Image 1: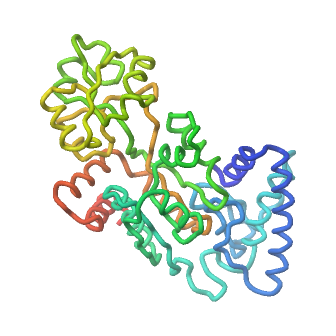
Image 2: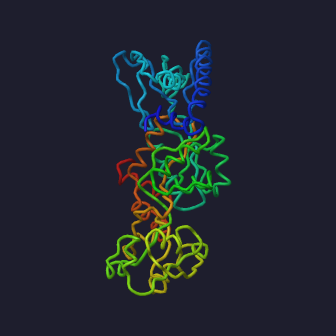
Image 3: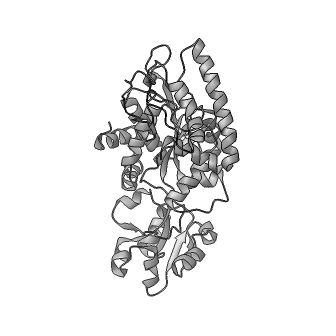
Amino acid sequence: MSFIARILRRVAAKGGLRRLRLEESRFAGAVQAASAERAQAAPTLGAHAMSAPGADVMSAERSQAAPARRTGAGSRVASCNAPARAPRFAKAVATLGAVALAVGCSNADPLRRADGKDRAGETIVVGSQDYYSNEIIAEIYAQALEAKGYKIERQMKIGQREVYMPEVRSGSIDVFPEYTGNLLQYIDSKASVTAPEPVYRALEKKLPRELTVLNQAPAADQDSYVVTAKFASENGIRTIGDLAKVKGRLVLGGNSELESRPYGPKGLKSAYGVSVSFTPIEDSGGPLTIKSLREGRAQVVDLYSGNPELSTGEFVVLQDPKNLFLSSHVVPLVSSKLPVRAAKILDGVSAKLTSEDLRAMNARSVKSGQPASKIAKDWLKGKGLG
């Protein structure tokens, strides 16, 4: 999604045309302020008035014929010396772009500060939840940025969202690995979308102004229904709906709250026509759940898709074409002050991070006890990012 498109979407989602006019006035004032500030001192390019990683726009040192360049979030920003154009809706778009252009069209390199030092030398704070899988992803982010010259401060194993979200929102933490669906539910408990793209779009709209999400990864860590590979082969099962073909009694196992969840027995029946009985297993997809599945006391269980047991080949994650489960893909949640070049690096990481990768790395942590730093280093090297 382009930089301007991101901003237009956020504005439209928060009040439509009336809001857009308010933003137009705000940005126009910011342009005047930026012009006055440049008269006294060199501009600082870490700021971002539009809550997405795009404040580090291209500098005017390019020649007048220089083409537009890509920003870290994949957006395209016009060259500062390119001739102005005026499409019919130019007033809104031009105003939204004015602040970025006012800051960027200077004689300073956008990757350099006013004192001439490379912005890559500034410290970026990377945090993680107190969850081994999340720490591994955070370490991947940290090492990928370090490989490109950034100084990183690590704040790992912070806790859950109630603890770290205020820190991210205040700008004390710049980068945090998140999960699209779970974060959306935290921000908007009434959200009803479940498919990957609608969840991602809804999350973009609901985030506070000072935060944004970069590109989501193919990797997901979300609820899923799992059977043994043997059971899947014997019954020709690949999807959740295929369970309807199974003859005999089907038992679903999981934490007791699963029985009343929208994707529990009632959801299976309404979405896929699958009837199951339920047995509670109170270890959140841990050894007891795996044992019940292996021994046939439950034919189907609820496991997070990043569970390292799923990397052994002994189990099969059933496909969910009707999106019964809330999509929860790995995504970098970032502060608006994050430099564009750093955002581009993180987008490159996300593009190569798969669910299979996540399960394999989690297995190394759980079964071999390897540290997150070692697991992250090996993954980056294997993907050509180290």
